[in-house]
Image (cartoon, rainbow, N blue to C red; front, side):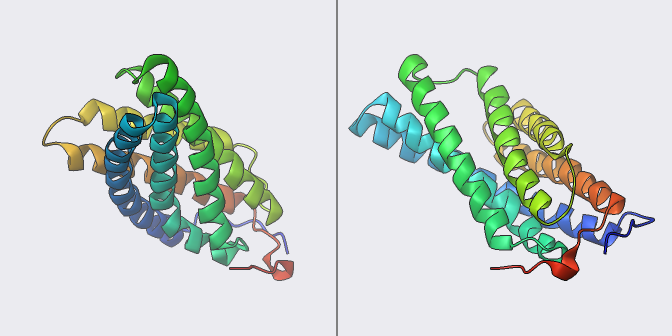
Length: 207
């Protein structure tokens, strides 16, 4: 079965927006808190490189968990294992950001306000986008534009978050990040699924 849908499934998109938006807001708070507290503690106990590795791994893993847990279970109906959607993304983001931050913190000690958001957005967007593109492809959903959509989503989300950030405005910043990320990825996935329906009749989903 590979029938084209006439319209976007707005119910699916709405569920994606709500679950992803809430997840990013909560996961983002945990990610930022753990990044600086745990990362700084490890840095003081060991060295800048290892502290940066821990900070990057925690940030990438927790933010990706928040962003992917709701959409991951939604994608089950389209032949994709939610476990793979969530855990593969967490692992990839944690490794990539951990290595990148370990290198950068050992060279520069910290990231300035302009470099940080751009680096986070590019690395997260591209890494998660490529992992999800591979899972979509395995399920028979051809969306070659997905890594680009993912990068654009994270660029917009991180840009808004750091633009609105500041003492006492943490939840506003994180809420804006969640809204932007969920909106771009939710509409992007709705558009992708409208173009083509995966061959789910022959796909066995594992947990």
